[in-house]
Image (tube, rainbow, N blue to C red):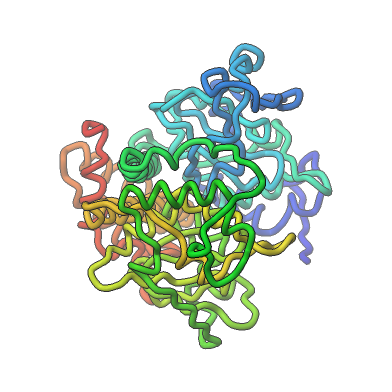
Length: 504
């Protein structure tokens, strides 16, 4: 609770949150910089499309449908991958032309949890429509959309969005309120320096996605029978007595599951128990500052991880002791919560729903992660899950799965390792851009510092940029008791070299 006396800052709104001390202090700080601009005045065009229901596409070929971006497709730092399942009829391009994403457009969630933001990349893999939960803002040419994204995703931008929410059940930000958000009106070079961090992150995510797609395609070429739509079978099957295992779970003899397993074995696949074991150690020894990986931390489609601190996870009871290597969730296998714990997170703890997969000597843990993430693996787990509300598999089910194998397993695994490094770097770059905007507003750096860094980059001199990045921690600039966000700036630059615009 708070109380505050407002005089000259009183506006048409009378809801208390609008006048929270933090929100008022943020507005004062921004305006104290001198040059500032309202979001509405920075727009060429703004629109929130209202769809009159979403038509079913299950009877349409994919060529007759269009991609659709919903808030659930966007992560907490603006990364997104268009869903293959959430699509709409292609006629929507004609029926809802304002819903078509435009390159460089800023997407601001204004209905729902109002926390998601995304930036439409300059090159689209395919045209797509944007959910009505987003406000689509096309900014003026002189305003860098990546910079505005960095401002809005940072703590000051979040405060200014939160103060505008109305409704009691579903949060909503009206257009006029959204347009009232102020932000610093910086020199174009300063905007570009900050915005390029966001665009670099987008390119890293794109390259990581390509590496992951290449992995899947190589496995698909080796065993095409287990990719694509599942085949329809009868509701019963006959198996040889020798096929009976430790239990008589009917799901183990699901006809489609048996078909997948046979097809993978015919191309040299292995049962996981041949190449790995399971560890499931728990601990009560952890502190509030330790990293925690819950199921929400794990992407269902990529190797991206988003650990949180124990203090924010509200952990009760024991946690899983995590080790470097693949992990897989026992709970709801259809969610495909499979990931790889890298060396930098090997001291983290996690949800007890996670099982640690320990590769046998000489086996690539990254390759095991990759094949466990495949849909043909999920297709083997799903029939085994027990429980109507919280369906689970167990460690024995995981070890029994048949996974594709490849002569170049180590190389394919290293490509997936590179993909995860790119996802991590993308998250850090987005965080750094937001923190640099905050540091500017707080007076820790100046607009001149940013302009100088951008001018140096344009001369081919990255020293200013590298020096600034080395100062960033998770909580801001120059905090001596915290590790740097980029402990190895050389490694970051090596990743960026693979995704430079002229290499695409």
